[in-house]
View 1: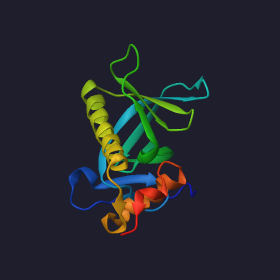
View 2: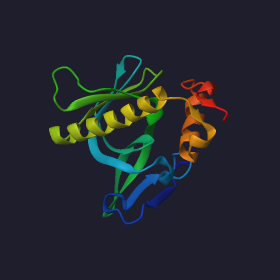
View 3: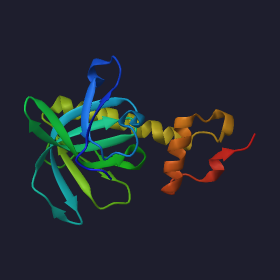
Length: 179
């Protein structure tokens, strides 16, 4: 993956999506990751195989197809973001509560021991993120448990997602039947 290069993706006239500067570490164009649904700054504890890191401030972007964790860089008056980690939504798992803390929730990639405990800046931010992620996961579950699709029913984006799922062993080829 390339590192150290900066891009600015323009997302049209939607004011909440005007500009997302990130280090180029996401394969393909950032705009191909779907609509930007949320972006906020969280305290993040990373846990990998039982080892817990200290809390780090991260700017996290929730797109329709990916969650991007970034380090906030302050260079002059314009903030920048250095890519740190990502989880594809089709591999995303969530624990919506952490015992004893009303601001935390946990995200991880299914099949990985690495966990990210996010501490939201406020209960309303936590609630908004949980609602968006739950909706994405329910949409994905409904798609996977729905009736078999024919080739004519599948859009280009769904086909790209199918290849991602198939590569991860989460979707069999029988779901797509011939007409």
